Every structure is written in C-alpha cells, then in structure tokens.
Length: 498
Image 1 (cartoon, rainbow, N blue to C red):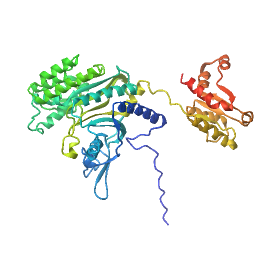
Image 2: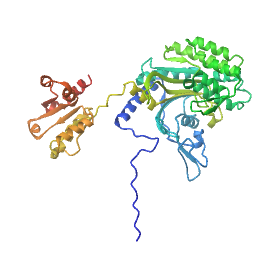
Image 3: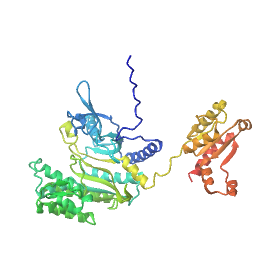
Image 4: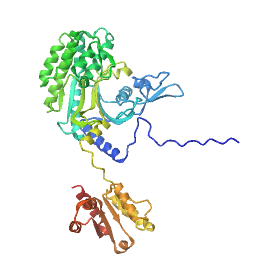
C-alpha cells in the first residue's frame, strides 16, 4: 500500500506586501483618525463607509487582461461573468455612490471616509499593498471656495493630528495653469486634446522629478533625454530650446510672495485662455485663505506641484512635511508628502454622462503615523490594563468581582488568566502588558478586608536610581481598605499621567 504523503504545514508568515498591526499601532491609528474625524465633522462633512469591493467598471482605471486579470487591483471574476475588485482608493467609490444615490443626497454633498485600500503593485521598502487612507470630498460645488476650504481643513487636520505649524506646508497649484503653459509651449492643442499626449506625459513626469533631478536634469528630460549615473538613458519630450525654456520658467516662477508668483504665472500664460482662468482661480483661493488667516507659512501657491492622476481638472494641492529625518543610509532628507488632492470635475461623468464638479483630499494614514513617530509624538508605549493577580485559584470569583468593579468605574483592567502558581511570572506578565498597577489580594488580606495595590510605574522608576531612604519615603506598594480600591487606583493613574 502506497504511503500517504503528509501535507506540509503552512508557513506562518505575512503575505508579501502586507503587514500585521498590533495593539499599540491600532490604538494610535484609531486615536489619530478620531481626531481627524472631529475636524472634518466641525467643517460640516458627513461620514461615509462604502463597500470594500467594487465592480471593475466602477473603478474604471484598471481593466482585466488575459495574463494579469487583476492589473493594478486585486480582482476576480464571478460565475456570472462580472469582474469585481478590492477598491484601490476611496474616491472612485465616492463617484459611484454619488451617481447611484444623487437624488437622495444634498447638493453639494460633503463626505469623509476612512479605511483600507488595496493595490496589486510590486511591494518594496515602505511600500505596501494594503494601506489606510483618510479622505474628504465635496461633490457638486463648482466654486474654488470649495477647494480653498479643503486646503484650510487639511492645514487644521495636520495640526490637530500632531504636526505643529512650521513643520508642514500645504502647496497649491492649478492644472489649468499648467495646461496654459503647455499650450504656450506648443505641446497642447485645445482643438485636439490627444495630440502631443505622449510629450505632455514626459513633461509632467519631468516636472514632478524636480526635487530629485534638479533644473539641469529636468531640462534634459524636456529635450532629447537624460542619462543617469548608471548609464541608463531616459527618452525626453523632444521640446526645442524655446519650448523648454517656457516650461522651465513655469517651474522657477515661485516667488517670495503669492502675489509675485501669480504675476509671473499670469505673464507666462498670456494667449492661453485656460491658463489665465487657472491663474484667476489661484488668486481667488489666495484671497479666501488670507481672509481666514491662513498665511503662506501654512498654505502657499507653488507651481511645482504636479499631481500624477490624470483626472485633476483644476486646483491641486499637496501637504508636505518640512522637517528632516535620516534615511536608511543615515543621510538627511525631508520627510515629504503625506496628503494630496485636487479638483476632478469629470469623474462622476463616467456614470451620469454629465459633468459634476468635485474636489477633495486624501491623507496617507500610515505616512502620517510614521511622521508622528519621527517627531516623537508616538514614542511612548501605550499604557496597558490594571492587572488583578491571582493568589488563590479557588477564589477566581473574588478576582472577577474586583475586575468588574474597576471596569464599571471606567478603568481598563484584566484578571491574570495564566498559570498562577508563580507570582513572579504574573508580575512579568504585567510588565510585558505595560500595566500601570497590579492588584494583590491573598486569603489573609481577604479576611482582614484589605487589599494590596502596587504602583508598577513608580516601582520601575525607583528601582533605577532611588536610595533606600527614597524607597521608604515613596513606597510603590500600599495596603488599603478593600472599599477604597477604585478611588486609590484612580488617584495613582492621575499621578502617573503627571
């Protein structure tokens, strides 16, 4: 009889490009999202939670093919033939929701959404296939006052989340201005939008690489092309010297004041009506933001902002953190962008056939959490529960009574449920849980109506450097009447918070 081949055990490992979030990370994210939601709510936005799964047609940007049916997304085909996919952002579902429920929704419709999104992309360092986004959008408002409001709200959100003023800047540009520059430079024909599309794509990517390549590198990409340090050659847009200089002038139009920047941009787009309209929109936004007290140290006009998504039709904005961090090689660099967005007036049109104005912003939650860690705003370990130790396993009902009293008083608490034989192991467990207090009640304490309370935080501090006299002056363990337990634990927790 043939021997049955034993099924190998599955590997206990996280799939590539994904990660697990443990208690402290989940708590930190929840607290940050709660703070952000309060800002959005204060601005009059309502919460929306959409399905994690959409039809591929609704997502729109990606289509299945033979070799990779989930190109860019995690997709599968239903038995009846429909293709479904996990959402890759929170904006495409919003467009579907608005088109589906537009007769029941107020106009404009203001919503915020928070949750995970999935992208079937090649993972790398700091690049995951599942991550959290936090969006806020206004659908149905054509006025740039809606764009200015999103920028103001983004500024407030960063500060509430823990990024102080001076450590960030919200940079604002307008795709209409860039289109005007393209028209003046001869790479955009208003009568034939598809003409020069390849050249415009190269120009946009070149502008977006200004920080990394510098002006000379961008100029090379606008022309014949550029060879990098490894010898690899990247084809350029093929612009002539005069055409390239128009684009370069746009990229260097940033001036010390918004007025000066806008004046330079206005000169560059003369003869291109769409560009003039874009400059006027930026002027209006600058006036509205200034009226609300948002100066250039928080929100600034910056022509170098180029959002990569093709559906942006007007103002675009990006929140950049300006403080320095050390990269994996120990080199100083700025933290970079944590949020971005803009106006996308044609997205809902895919469903309705009619253009619907919309604008919004998306915050990269994981990026923002990483920034808070860099700033030392999340360095402290999250406090664990009060641990009620077990001195006598036959008295488990007594210990459950104690923990129930603490929970009823709003105090996070748990009973030790491991093997109670070794009391030292119970204190080690409390330490690993980062417990602030241990509660101890043996049979003798029970008979006398008292209980022991051990301040674990104070005890750890005293153990590091305290003298015998200090130990006596500041005891970390107390015997108190059983009836005073809740009040004493509250007092200790208050003292630990300083």
